[in-house]
Length: 117
Image (cartoon, rainbow, N blue to C red; front, side):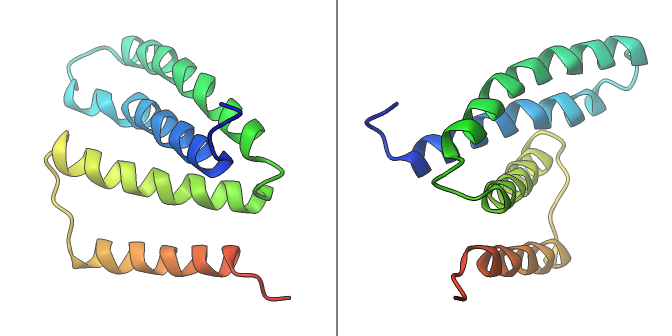
């Protein structure tokens, strides 16, 4: 990993970790008949793999990115992964209001990453 650019490694690990976490948090929604304890334990198991990617992503990216920038990247990725997951896995459509909301979040990310000094 030392030869790959820090942003590529950091963002790649964050995307992969978010796929795991999205399934951990929302994947069970298609299995409403499963006992709650079973889905909680399954979610914890999936989340373990998310942490195996998330922690190194933040560790590797910190210094190149500030903590606020890392969190912003995380949130943008989270919403992007969730939008794809929601539309494909859960079959829930995204409307104009989602597009407006995501645009406002992207505007917030711009302010986090823009150098004002």
